[in-house]
Amino acid sequence: MIYLDNAATGGSKPAAVQNAVLSALKQCANPGRSGHRLSLACAERVLACRELLSDLFGGYGYERTVFTRSCTEALNLALRGVLQKGDHVVTTALEHNSVLRPLEALSREGVISYDVAPLENGHLRPEAVSSLVKENTRLVAVTTASNVTGEAPDFKAIRALLPERVFLVADGAQGAGHLPIHMQEWGIDALALAGHKGLFAMQGAAALLFSERLSPRPILFGGTGSESFDLGMPQFYPDRLEAGTLSYPAICSLFEGALIVKTHRREYAEKLFELTAVFHAALLSLGTYRAYFTPNPCGIASFRHESLSSEELADILSEKYDIAVRGGLHCAPLIHRALGTFPDGLVRVSFSPLQSLREVDALTAALKDIGGSTCS
Image (cartoon, rainbow, N blue to C red; front, side, top):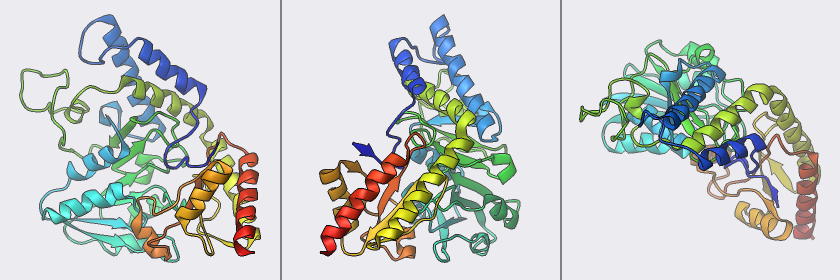
């Protein structure tokens, strides 16, 4: 199979990541729960991963790097753990449902109100975000990169237009590992990470990094291995937000993946830009397809056929050509409304930097064949 669904989850994991997981599964203990040698060794590896992520993304220290099971959980922590009754939030039409649904739930519960910044020709203008800020706006939530078009908002420009009191939350699911995200330089107060995409980790490896300005409340309660005499959650981070046993194998995979990104991010970004650029040119030459992306360092390329639905085309690519892509709305309904592709959606191809032009050529040949047979 030619796997081109890396924006959903990375399909190929580097050997170092695989080995780290196998090693953790062969011998591991519960980090932070016991005082014996193996438990302490695991705890040291967990701490090393916190420090690496904070350093890689310009964060605010290991104690403000919290592990979660998914980027969705991390975003819920940043939203439900921070917002209060009467708050207002600004978000954008680029967002994934992992941002939109928590906000909608809080709105239906009568906790908050929110507004959505529109797109202009598929792009987000910083002024479109800042113009929606009100006196009671507490938080602005923006994706680092669209999972449909690869559009990457200008965080520095957005931060510059926001009042100091307003928190800036970033969904790093698609941008992390591809873009040079630096929380302090970009003015980001909270960054949610999905380890299993651009960071090469396994599923179940995710994190929330947050600044000293934020004091998120826990949304999950349980054991932490610390202050066990108190029936309330600990008051210090990261323990306050990490109820239950951490997935040590997942954290080990995230550590190794982040090390790879730290060394190779720039060259990988250039590789993905090249792959999307070559595919963009090839797609336009076929004539029966319309592109909804431009070359980008996140490897995302969405398009549609002039007569086939996105799901039909994705099924044909899978069944006849053994090429894995994704059709539909990609859990991002608002951008499809903005693009005029709702409700059918688009076919999304998402490349890995571990792939080459051979995959682009194979996909292009398949699309040419499909386009020709459909129009004959």
